[in-house]
View 1 (tube, rainbow, N blue to C red):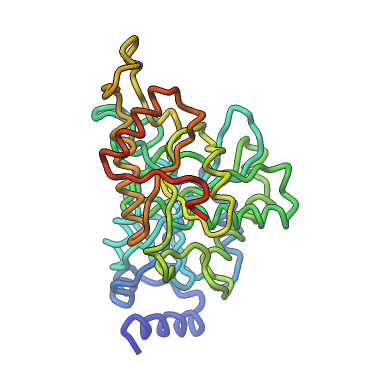
View 2: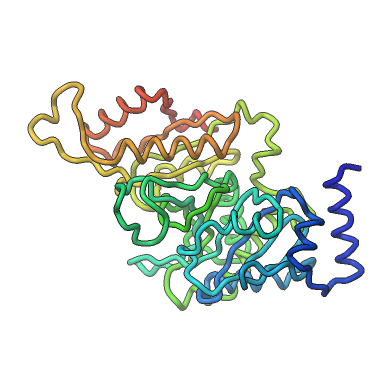
Length: 352
């Protein structure tokens, strides 16, 4: 038996014998050195965060874990749930802080949060995080830092499809829209990260049926129900043959990219909406060849590509462009830059 296998057996035995025993940080660190875990983060000040977290903790197998800087945690197999009482987008580097406190390596981070929208439409959403388009010195309005994006959690595409299936089976649709969102906001993390959200007003943030659907997504998606985990890239045996969609352009809910991600087997990385690709209009010179288009759009694409590639080792990242969302001179500039950077452009059929 491997060392990790021994510690897993020891952990499960301890749960059986002492299901309510609180584990100290020092003992936890000693007994779980170098273990790879999933970190789920919830905040008590957000009903769309603590609601799903409470529903998840009501499911079997959880027991108290070590407190991290006054934040309580809970343990279930290789999953850790951490609760705090601050803004979900401002509490930075919780993955690093967990590793430092316990010795466990955080393989991925999943945040539970509310979603807001001007439409107030009820929604269940999934998205990667980052603000790669901001200039150095700019103050991010909702966390993160300029020119930064977290590696996108490889589960985003598979979990989007699973969430749609769960919402359908729980009769939440068509009342709730199940949708992807473009890459946006913080907090800062180093591990592959995604947000799972309930929108879009307080009435829906507090909906117990929506909270239960998100809890079921995490429960099934991480294999806590005893089944196979959903969207585990590390178990993708043909990773070198897999294509990963890097979305470029479109609105916040990335409909052209989402049309592709709805198909089974499609992996998705960062999704850059048009507002995350600032391009300064060159005026009358826009018809010229080799046009220099200013703005931080190049930076945003490069950061999004590099972090997506880091999240999918051995996979091939292809840019998918929402052509209809760009003017001719914008599309020409983007296509030219992608060619310069050796970033391939994919058609919808390339991802199936």
